[in-house]
Length: 430
Image (cartoon, rainbow, N blue to C red):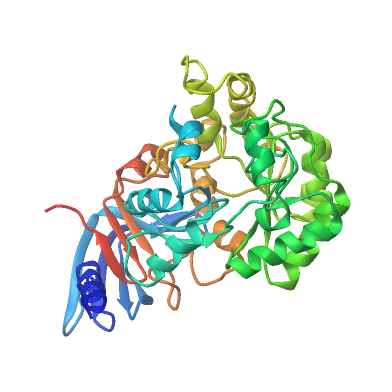
């Protein structure tokens, strides 16, 4: 009984406008993510968590309707960050904490990270690796926690010693006590292992599959770019993922591992540091998206200059690889590769996700394209058609900010209105 009363109390504090009550948003401007155009004044009518109507001009509603004046702001569909890690955040203590903290500690931390992400304008995220995130997703869906809609990968899939091998950095005594990790722990070394690892993620309730196709920057291992799967292993993962309706994201820095991942049929390449013309050509042929995560690259390159922030085995990788990603994004965009929005947040501080837009524009990607990459394009990457645009029948995920981000991309850092599924979580102070 006490638990039921507590749950009811929590739900009552989180629920803002009641579903079923109409809300009218008076937007000074409206970014149409389908066309990439900034439109003039519009009135958006929200009902039962969805957009009921989008009307040109300021239209005063009739009846019992909650009106919200956003006439000095630009409205648009809520953003999606396709690469986050809500269970953690980088710090000089990150590596030692892995031996001192457990999943409960990380779960409590994730609650604050999720709320910061939502309040920054990100109404959906794809969490690409973290065992606590499926549970966080469920808590958000139940209304117990404030946060974005989550597509959770759960445990990333790696090969022995690969970027997501959970025993990297352990001494030989610990590794002997724990034993070699296998498909249950997300570590594979054969086609059969690959199938079992995907099925285990299904068993655990994942929404998407993440593989680490090459070495990584922040893993406790020497190489940041060596290939770590065969094409046949990737194909086994992709084919098995399709059985469960999953899409596959591939962390990749090195050229050969990236090429193998695309050849094996993955949907997205994450980071893509050493992307070559050969890889770009195959990505265009296969229809794969590129999620650059420029923020993470710049963040680790900067932190590599600080003594003690990273272990010495990590530091040279962070300095070398991190500084290249923005240039790769510029090259990929010019080369015609499809670009989708992602930050790898959890490397940098949660809630600062929108800074990625600024870095994309600096790389030569037009502001309209950058904003579309986090709205209608992100919905396509996720395989959904009910979000990413402000249109009748779509989810009422709507954000607003002072100023026009197409005219000045820095306005993305000023989001002060956030609605998700018709519920207002943030509203301008009057």
